[in-house]
Length: 239
View 1 (cartoon, rainbow, N blue to C red):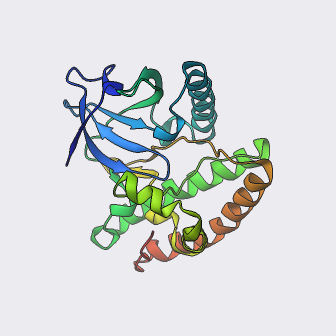
View 2: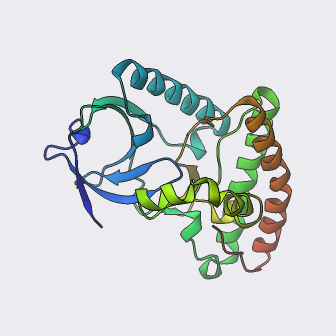
């Protein structure tokens, strides 16, 4: 892994250098030197202090809502810190405990799991689906249970470019499934599935309506995949 140095990491690291361990649709993800915490940074939200504070409050409120949605069994705590980067911009850091031994569902080898382990994972995901649907019925919102990954900030910029829209739609509707989620993690003891990303959807009302409608429909596909996985069937590749 590569270490990245920036004054933005001053609240969590003395030499301001952290190891990058992952990247998502909007975030770069780092780990502290002592492997106790994960630090997430959204470079596109950097700017003036008042703006960063407003984003931190919005992000914290969303995380609290989604933690209530899934309950303590399926969530981990998130803390929000406003700091300045080396360029002088105010940034929001999201700090979470590092899940030692945890694996994103996208990296789980389901073929290596026994029948009882498969049934346990399926039960966890069925509970998460039920909670997400109930929460949507109450609030018109739900957490992103799928997520997306990127190898670098350059790759993330390329994937978010307008000409990549057909690929993003294909990935969103066809290739992503809950068993290959980037936002859900199987804990090291393989007993719980927890949400690790609590981002809010930063789009307009019409976009959110379409987005959540499609997500609700895709849960039917995911439930079919859970049924198939529990019976020993192979799990399709994700995106």
